[in-house]
Length: 164
Image 1 (cartoon, one colour):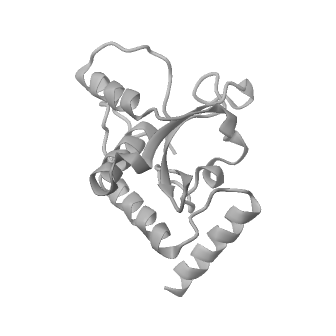
Image 2 (spheres, one colour):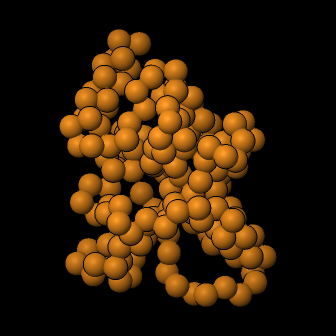
């Protein structure tokens, strides 16, 4: 327990230093942290592409949040940075989809892949993440697209998805 309290304090301190919209109350932090762990335990290939990527994780997190807390306090966000200097999945620095949750009167960016020691997108992706490329409220499209992908129906073939 002491280790987690120290870890929680460290995350808060780092978040304040780097200007991240962090979750300040322990209760709200645990609410998000526990839901993320539940979502990761349910991890599966939602869109049938044979891989588990940020798309799958974000949709599972979104659906689980909606079932527990409603859809007004969660949204999916796509980040597409067209700077070719880091291209590892195509001509983008970062092709990524993540969730934002509304807690403590502000939107907090949650890294739904669970691949890092932080809950926050900004901590997880360092300089590859640039918020000016965020596209908000993408949940309807990505849930629709995942269903079409799984059914084998045609969709644009742009490369997307990041595995951590």
